Image 1 (cartoon, rainbow, N blue to C red):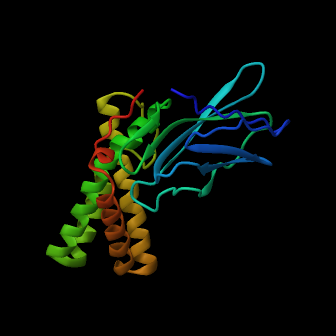
Image 2: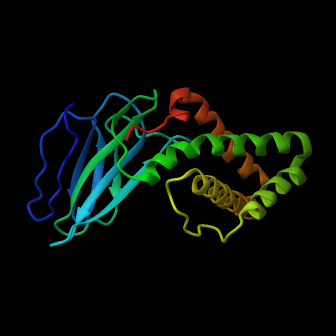
Length: 217
């Protein structure tokens, strides 16, 4: 398989020529990604290596499953803070039809893909609650999800095993619930419903295989 490794050096500002689906380009202290394929991209993972003499590795990823995708010829800011002399490479891409390129390199990215199904069920459940019980029922589900989190929101958990994944699902959905309550307070219930409907509608346009993907590693 042809490699998608595009090394970026801010010192030389050099970029290898490629026909692969994503092109990374340096721009001062950030790296942009351009979709060079004919397909909409709904997930992208980039590995960044920096530091000498001991390399430090970090990852940047974007999931577009519930929102507007990364369309052909579009460019996004992929690495907002690219250290001097850092090297960045695309390690994994998933398209809207469910097909993939490369392999997931970061455990968190694999969990991001697994997280889509519980997120969708949560969003659908919120809409169902509102349809049956109105605003009080919606608020009840949101508050119950927040209370279900057994530790402070966004507290670190160990990534990798089933127990930690279930914990992370609870935490992520609690964070989503808190965010929706803030939107409700600032802009009203209508905005919350609009946001939820958009997420569910967009997910419905994605391939079912994209929802159930077990990321190749």
